[in-house]
Length: 330
Image (cartoon, rainbow, N blue to C red; front, side, top):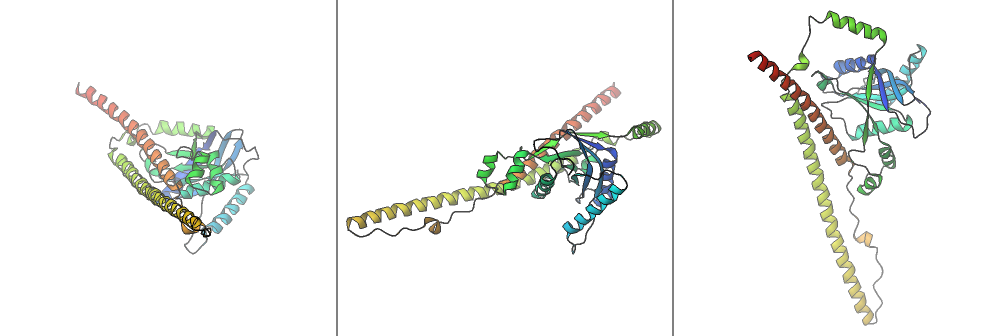
């Protein structure tokens, strides 16, 4: 455990060493196939008051299809943390990280992993790194954790609409984002200042690229796919409501017919019909789970925020380019 504080304690800030970010980027470049393949790893560090300090990390091992990934991963993590402890490096487990493709990370697999981490290590977080957005000149690195409401809801493993309404679960209450602060040592800061002075003559302006249509197009295409998934799920739910309404109508007609027949038998002096279990005659329809649709709605919200953020940055660059063009023409 990273710490042994009370259950009500909360991590309000995530402080990440620059070395950790460089390791994550290197891992994604070497094994992520240009950002399309998912890479994951372990975060190490400590908790100081309400601040989670991430000081080291290492990737999950590669495995063959014939090998059990869970068994190989657990053995590898134990061996790595034992070796780090021997060389006096922070070895406390404080979470995990994974890469994403254009911010597509909200799914059931992430919920399962984060729930297991957060259930055993309360302060654990998941870092989401987007290599494709980073190549456009903006470091895309965010920290998330499950909300307390989501932890209670997920622990019950009852994903019916009634239980979701009971716990107040919607796409806004699944994950909470925690602010991130990057930290470097004084020696590293001095080195960066020296390197910045030496590289002023060879400056690169890739971050000022005005060709942003391709990025926005990919984000909008993914958003359209999510809208299609929501439409399919909505049709399933409407079909369930329609079938349930028909079943209730048939059930009420059967009960009414049975009551009329019993009334006629009573008038004739005959015994009433034997009692029957209506649930056997009219089996309740299985209620569709709403968690997957809620996750898709959360992913759509994430895409919309990304589009707004990227569009605002692109507009700023376009206004700056327009000003420079006007000055040159004048």
